Amino acid sequence: MANWLEAKVKRLIWWNEKLFSLVVTADIDPFTAGQYTKLALQIGDQRVARAYSFVNPPSSNNLEFYLIKVDDGALSAALARLQPGDSVQIAAQSNGFFTLDEVPSAEQLWMLSTGTAIGPFLSMLQEQQVWQQFQHIVLVHCVRHSDDLSYKEMILELQEQHPQLQYVPVVTREKDITPLKQRIPALITSGELFAHVQLEATPDVAQFMICGNPDMVKETSQCLSDLGYNRNRRRSPGQITVEQYW
Image (cartoon, rainbow, N blue to C red; front, side):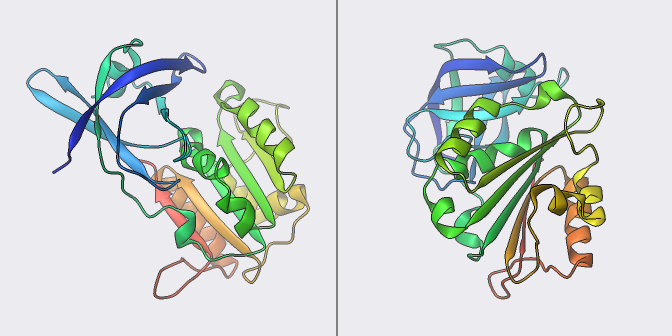
């Protein structure tokens, strides 16, 4: 059973009509970048809760979550109506193993994300561990439309601070917005992704973290498996670490 605390809404950041970030404050237990917690609201006679990954680093006093508003969603539509000063329930303890502590050190780290699943990667990139653990870091964010490319200002600031970071935005449903236009599995299979960033990825130098919807995770994992990469497990370290984002 979750230990629920009251969190105060500090602000909502709207990226477009569907995507928004919810920033709250609460005295939760310490967490690790890449983990998630649960947010909840009392709707009718029941508590409706969903899991959301942190966008903020553990060192931040503000707790930030990146969401998509689903009009008929059980919780997201209600969260989207919150105003500064409102309350939302938050689980005190965070969970999840999609963290850098679970990933073997390597020369390259490929962070492959779609939609709001970029959130846990942003949390990791605001911590020092990732820059010490990997020499080259590639953040891929694949979306359907250009206005879905949120957090670009933060990412550009991270690039200025850390030249080892390459940011690869991918827009699939608009022409001539980004150099790469296909979904991530296709970009891996064709070799276009690796050529674009001018890095030769092989199992002895590369680690892949994949975060997205179940189909994306499954297809991307299979593409990498076909190229000789293996799932990363504690008993048998590999090169593929995954998180399904719903």
